[in-house]
Image (tube, rainbow, N blue to C red):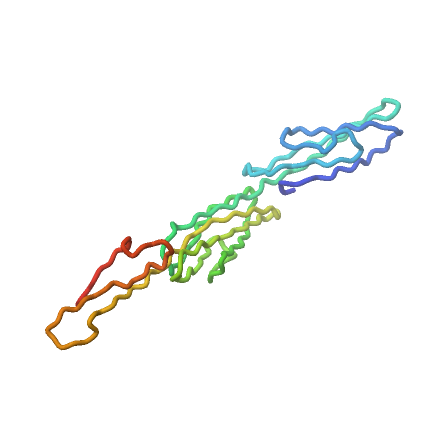
Length: 212
């Protein structure tokens, strides 16, 4: 089964009561809720080792007369896939972003589910090569969270997320004074551009004037 998991273990022994029970397992990574009761549960922690492993679970039953019997069965723990991807550095919008998947699995095929919040248009959202179209923002930066959930052929899943900050586009504007007059004259150009980012002063921006 897929980790993490909790196995419910039921005792099916035929024994003269009252009886004693002793559960053991050949791995220190798992633990019983109660190793001396007729029924118990076995907790299997998260398993991101990249390889499957088989544990051996044993039950010793001792009757009221002191007669005993041992039984053993094997249980395979599937290593969960590891979801991982990277995003480009935060940048100005609009632009496309292409998450770069580097997920791994001990299984075979991986199924992908991608989503983004706040919502943005996307494509190929069930493949390893998705894309998202980040729209322009004119009022402060927008932090987008991209989510990935992967599922392998055994049904084991993993999820992760990354963030991308879309910086706002500045708005270029200027005022000409005087608006009209008889020449010759001197025109005064006043920069009225805004950054679109709260707290970003105009004097921290760069400007290039072109008078043709």
